[in-house]
Structures are given as structure tokens and as C-alpha cells.
Image (tube, rainbow, N blue to C red):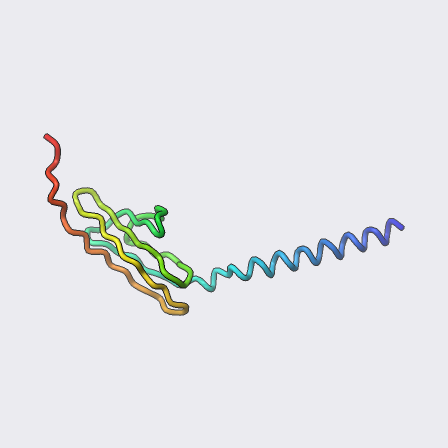
Length: 106
């Protein structure tokens, strides 16, 4: 009886593991597209879809679809664009930030 129960538990765990792996593959990192992000001036802070992801220059992988890219740097106006990422099409983004007209505090 214990042997049969062990076999049943083993089969259930095996099928659960297979289902988990299959669902993880649906979010396959290979389905993400490489995007190279650069800024002028360099080292602008980069947000993608509102979340901070790092400083330019950087390489990132995005899922196909529309994403909001935003770059900011001290003494420069914020730069933002919508980027449509297409499957299997690596993309380069260069943000040219304009100097801010704001005067520093005295």
C-alpha cells in the first residue's frame, strides 16, 4: 500500500513539475527583444513603463509591444517616447536631452 501511494505521489509531483516548466516557457526570455539605450549626455536615468531600470548607456530586453521610455538627467529636460518593440527586431534608442532653461537656486 505504501509503495502504491509513493508511486501516485511521484506521478503527481512529476506532472506538476512538467506543468510548471511549460508555463515558465510561455514567458520565455528568448521572446524578449534586445534594446540598446543611449543618451546624450551620457548617464541619464532610464525608466521603462514608469519603472527605473538603470543609467544609459545600457542594454535591456523587452517583450514585443508598446513601451514608454523616459530619460532624465540633472540640468536637462526629461526626454520620453513610446517605443514599439517588434519580435525578432533588435532596436537602438538614443535620447537627445535638451538643456533645461531653469536657473539654479542662489
